[in-house]
Image 1 (tube, rainbow, N blue to C red):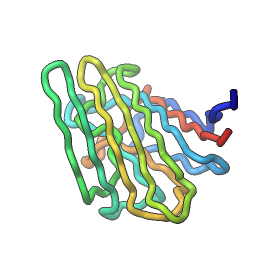
Image 2: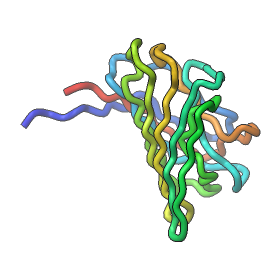
Image 3: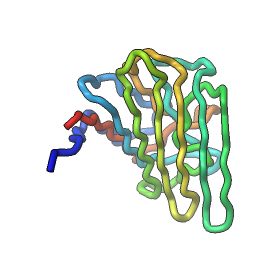
Image 4: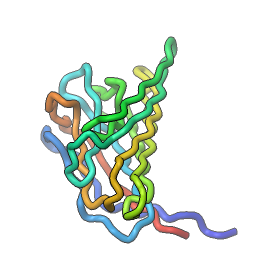
Length: 169
């Protein structure tokens, strides 16, 4: 049986203090990237998490989300966002370790196609969500900034982020 793709840890960060954002900018030689996050919010409500590629804060990101909890289901479509949302449903908890967010960033180094992300997040007490994001830019991704909601709420102490690279088999 042929070997499957290999996940290699590139960088891991556990916040020892509140941060307005974190940046990953040292990765190359992979076909795809995976960001695994366990975020913590300082506000406790109306908090979402986002990615920004290469510092681009123009309206060049699209989003489709599907989400649900024990009583309702819903979805959202955003066609001109200034960030790539990876937790859109105000679901980032105030307790460390409650939510796991896994974001696949496909073909990040390709220079001929838009960049796509697929994110899955869950917290059984809040919501389960899947998001498809598109960065409408053909530039290779050279930096990834992670932040919390538009009002500038910091990412809280205890949040963890690990970036993995996937190498072709």
